[in-house]
Figure 1 (tube, rainbow, N blue to C red):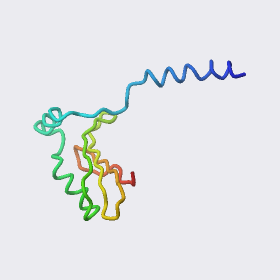
Figure 2: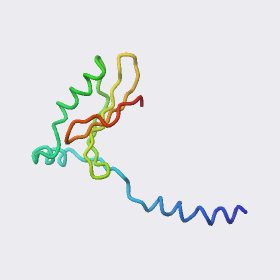
Figure 3: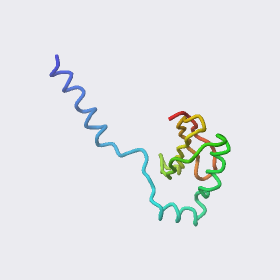
Amino acid sequence: MRATLLLCTMPLVLLLAATPAASRDLDQDEALRLRREGLILPLDGLLDSALARHPGARLLEAELEEEHGRYVYEIELLTRGGVARELELDARTGEVLKDEVD
């Protein structure tokens, strides 16, 4: 029974291990190039927008990622109440894609 289960699940495990990551972090040079080409909005304006959603919050971290062909700023904030929040903003439009407790 266990051997059969193992044989049935092994191909799934191998498939998941071989699947490329759905997102990748972009480095500073790549982000600057995308900004210069007008493909993404500047982080400072979007950061102001994110902080306005949570007055008094402090920035913990900001990253630019490419997720499924879409550029996304991932922003982590610490609210006045000590709650960590994770926001995702579309880097092309500024649309808030996610705003949840981390």
